[in-house]
Image 1 (cartoon, one colour):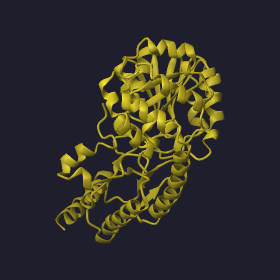
Image 2 (cartoon, rainbow, N blue to C red):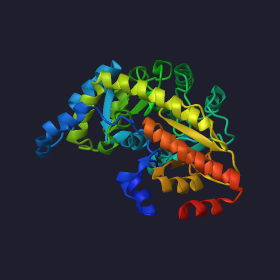
Image 3 (tube, rainbow, N blue to C red):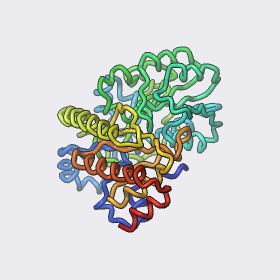
Length: 376
């Protein structure tokens, strides 16, 4: 397993000797508004349901998802986070090889390896983001395999047009295309990019989504996939029972029907995304990539400091960012920050500006900068 996921706040706080309640976590890209109020209310009202086993078939939640996607509930599998489903798919479908366009979400590689599937990596390490149709065409020689596509891609934020994905699916009938749309709910005009409504109708397409990032309850672990019935039946032969707890099912059912919350989230994130991006562009020594969702990938253009160095310095302000040096195709010159509240975004920009200004003005090496900030 690749260490260094965003959101591992307890591990980082243990490393630096910090109180988790005092940390501003920019490493986890979760809705800054938190979860819907009705989720709080309903879980408290139904707390006594803890004495009963959960519905192993997630009946109500699958129906709510099916209504939203405009498909049948027989096209839906609900999982303990989207991660469970990423591991389930290669285990059940048994492809000869799994193909990844790097850099991308690290769990894809781990999921393939855990199913003893040969991993083929096509690495874009020249910093030329976003992904282009030329990159997709590199998949045409793959035979009898599975391709994981992350759309929007994590950590780069790149988007692939729906028409390009459907073209790949059509011309690659020998390949199973698995599209991770975990962050698609945050995307403006998502109809240009999402293929979730096509998945029930196509033999070699599966779409996976998370319900925890957009609806703000990652601690409950909840995700789902959409596929045609033949693929769903095959996957269910390998899926463990009882993986989705009662409260996760209740939260998902309530959240997915909260249209007002969804509208408010998109408006808020869109505004703060623009504010954070503009603020990052004004800081010398770094260059943010234009964001499409609720996080921003940032490249460091200063030889004196690395992503881990910046992370160490920001810890002094109780701020955690995502060091992206362990993403294949990136380096220690990249980090990622989530979009949070205005006050929190302002604090990040202020602290990051002080770090970079100090590096530039002092002309010291990275070790010297770290020491200076640690002792102040």
